[in-house]
Image (tube, rainbow, N blue to C red; front, side, top):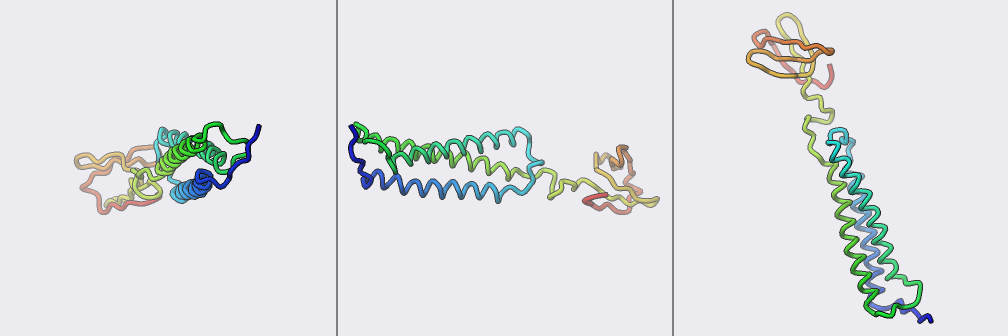
Length: 174
């Protein structure tokens, strides 16, 4: 036997307002994730990319679950529950799941701000153009030992004595 549903109770009104907040918060965190992603994902460790993906998918799934739970309180379709506290309990669970979803989504978004340990946007700060008294060479710096620079040039290693170096400049490309 169905009872008329009172859609004007304080719990239902609160649930409707929470739905607005849910959508606004999740939209904002999603926007931050889109704006924070600068294409530097290649610089992130693989484990971080995988963890970020798991957090993003879990956050999305939990967001859908949270919105659904709160929607069942805000806009009940069937008869009232025998327990008057059931809608309030579902609303509390929905709010908790919302916070968990926002946290996971924010965590996934924060992973795009992993520091670039290679310096610069291209990661080529270790390329050097070295001019000596007998010519110049450009390559990736491998090491700097006592009195020499070791550069990788076209698959080979070139050792340049420091006493012959006239100038050293960091370059983006050789």
